[in-house]
Image (cartoon, rainbow, N blue to C red; front, side, top):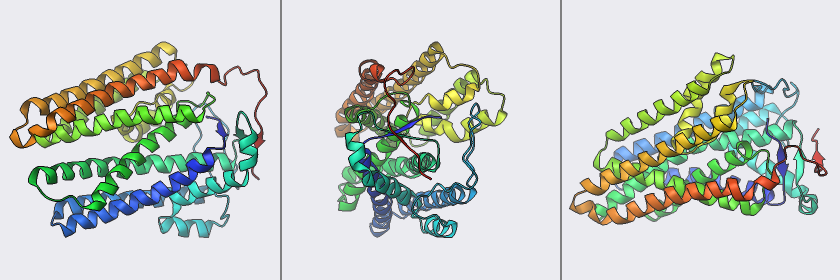
Length: 386
């Protein structure tokens, strides 16, 4: 499993994540109520249902993580968390944690716990050059659990809400209707929340063996922002002209991703491939991450050649889909939609190509010298929370 190195900037990042989670859910609910006020009953029902379903899943996930005290082990990792280790640092009582989870306070609470932990050790974090290594104990699993909750929130709420909000705003502009202030607020928050989720997971999974600096995180965040903006607008503008054909695009993408996963599968556990199909494959609709493909390999090495083939295949598929969708809109849009053609095409092309180039730059230019594999320098300080 990946190692976690906490640095001084994590103090503010965890606080920002807690605020972002609360703001995203709150503005989504307010936007749903605004749809009802404006007479968009269908969008009100869809938007509110997405939020309620997400909150339910987050509450259940948080309750399970709080009460089980046993964490699923990796295919090749026999280490498990001790049975009596509660991942929650502040509230050790299971009853209190379950109550807070039922009140939908689980996700922001976990982020705040990480913030308080870093804030209490800010001086040590500031002076540590390489960061503070967190051992595989309750703090480590709290950190991973916090990011997993953010991933669920991003996939179930932020992504669909972002698509719905931008779609409704474009429809209002075309029809001459006024766009409410809450829509202008909710849309960028959903976008930032989605980009933040992918960036956080990439830090934990993709760049686990690298010494990450703050500037590296900014670069990764910008690359993800470009590709997600391109993907979102391509889907929305294609849906405007071909409302139901977008489902075919999603299905083809899902089939190709699962074929790649099946081709890479060498694990002895059948549940690994089923978990990938039904849980991880939707993740690849917006984003590529080799971590979940590595889990399919089991004890078989995931060679550099295979990693390059899978990464290049996904990025080609991603780019072709985006370009095909935006050009389908560009050449078939009618007069009312004509004013969106050039800006939409520019954003999709620049965001898609620019995001991939930034990601390639991050791999080639920034991180090679910071790899922790075969490290010879002094290991950072270790924090062990008992």
